[in-house]
Amino acid sequence: LAVLGPGALGCSLARHAVSRGISVRLVGRDEAHARAALDKLGRRGIEVSRIRAWGCEAAAFEGADAVLEALPEDLERKAAAWRGLVPMLPPGALRLTGSSSLPVSALDAAAGLEGRLMAFHLFVPVGRMDVVELVAPSRVPAPDRARAASLASALDLRLVQVQDGPGFAAARMGLAQGLEAMRLLESGVATAEDLEALMVKGYGHPVGPLELSERVGLDLRLSIAEGIVAETGEGQFEPARIL
Image (cartoon, rainbow, N blue to C red; front, side, top):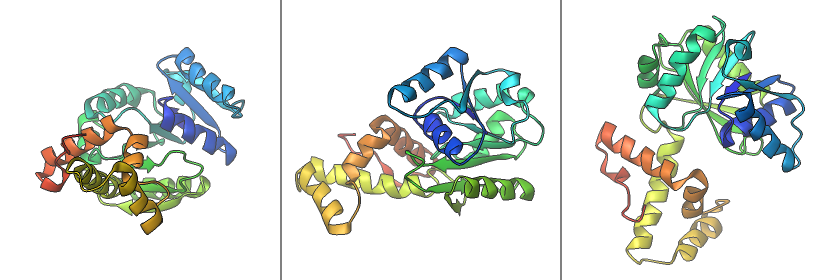
């Protein structure tokens, strides 16, 4: 498994994958970029000796069964990265994006991937959040779909397949709840602490929607909300003013 992008998602996936016996190459802008991410993991007491650090070059992807791009949630940035990757990839390598919300068909078209791109939306930390949201548009060959399911199984993750569209399913559900909590907060219905307590103690959620929004990243939540509204016009995803 080659993972492009040594950020939180890429590092979390790499750590979990090697714990399941999968050989991992963590690919950064250059080897130093990937090595710095591994060094940070090592300082936190995480075993990293089985993860290889690579720069973004053809040798990093040689023989890879699957390539997962884990770059920030920006269609143009992801598409540009894939356009550069294609000449370096083995013909049979699975092409996966870690996107949580960008329509896969749009990214596939922008990158010129000819209908082979799938979203493999993981949740961080990967080892504790044992589910993956798979988005495989109809043009994706059946063998690629089967191999993506096999990868999920090898990672000990429950596979949930959803249809393509802005926000997929997980981001839409989480975002809708987070935005509603923000609106309740800004209108003075209750304090942040009390709104969180209702969901944690009343519904058994591990964290409330406001804390979850901060963990996901407020900038990412805002970007996803704006993207869904731009694509669909659905008013419930209009960003709250405080966001």
